[in-house]
Image 1 (cartoon, one colour):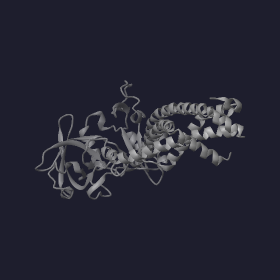
Image 2 (image 1 turned 90 degrees about the horizontal axis):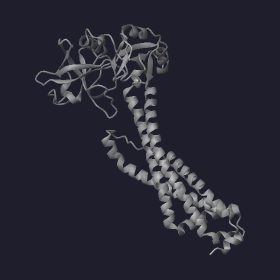
Image 3 (image 1 turned 180 degrees about the horizontal axis):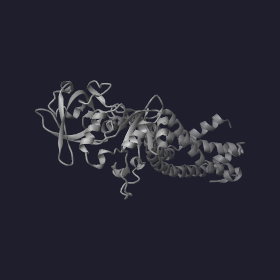
Image 4 (image 1 turned 30 degrees about the horizontal axis):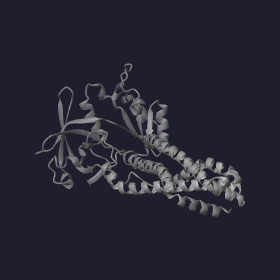
Amino acid sequence: MKVVDIFKRSGRNLRQAKVRTLLTASAIAVGGFTLTITLAAATGARSFTDRLVKANFDPHSVYVAKDKAFFDGSNSGKPQQYSADLASANGALVKQFDANDIKKMEALPHVKQVIPGYTLTAQFITREGAKQYTGAVNLYSPTSKPQVKAGAIPETLAANETLLPDDYLSLLNFKDANDALGKTITVQVRQNTGKTEARQYKVVAVTTKSSLSLDFNQTGPYVSVDEAHNLNSFINGGTVFSDLVPIVAISGDGVSADVLKDEVTKLGFEGRTAKDMQEFLNQIITILQSIIIVFGMITLIASFFGVVNTQYISVLERTREIGLMKALGASRRTVSRLFMVEATWIGFFGSALGAALAIGVGTALNPWVSDKLKFGHDHLLIFKPSQIVLLILFLMLITTIAGLLPARRAAKLDPIEALRTE
């Protein structure tokens, strides 16, 4: 029997047992649906992390901490031996950079600028005729990428200039973003001793939060690196934090981030590039994806035995038919192939049905999910045709293997005994 005839006959046999075929294929469809959604979600999440990293981290810079625990939190909650450079950051006691450490990094061959990562809190932010609001004071650097709503960010931010988040527009009685440009706001900071100092800043641009923004601090105006240093010195004057900083960003002088990372690593510091951060986020996604895939595979295991059971029943029901085929000259290989192809068809129908349902449901839910997760115009579920095709082929392979045992049983039937079967 030709291969084409085997495919035609197997399809005809499945049509004659439509309900049983549909039920068996439905079990495969559940696994196919789960795996298709999982792959689409993982693809969308990786795409989002790629945009997230690009929007928040400079690919040419290195983010450096003195202690590895700053990145992984390995010292969180653990007592540490006293050290002059030990202080709390990121919820853990970690060693932080002092002035000498900064000088060492500035002296590296390919370092252009070392930008400390200050954490600053204003006592209040206001302007004439407006109420006072608490908030953070953020450091603006070339590695920062705030989205501009009005105005323009100068190449170098002056000490008396600021970028104002649009969250403060109505609070500070501005009509709109353009109305805030050129106006002055007041930021008052306070020491632990109770001493305060008010500083005036001219708004040169208004920023807005995008779906890709990472706010590690509270919302607040951006100031220059030098101004942030001055504020930090005043706020933390007389405390350990006046000379310590948990993280710095290093920009290079025409070299790759990997070269800078190697240089700071030789100093004994911990460096992370934008690529490293993206890989870390992708590892988390991979772990979550693997967990969901395990549940999908459990469904497939149940489906596997369902196919075996279905094909065994089919062999028992068609014993006389198998005997007649052999009596007419059909080889054991032909009979075996017939049942294996039937199992393959079941895998194709089930996986295609599951993938189609996943695409339909995912496409319908994408706008709602994007709105809830604030993804903007981007979608969480991204269906790649290549992944779907490979998944269907994989499920077809699984069902083909499941049909192997019943196929061997059918091939071994004695034609004389088979024809005697009632």
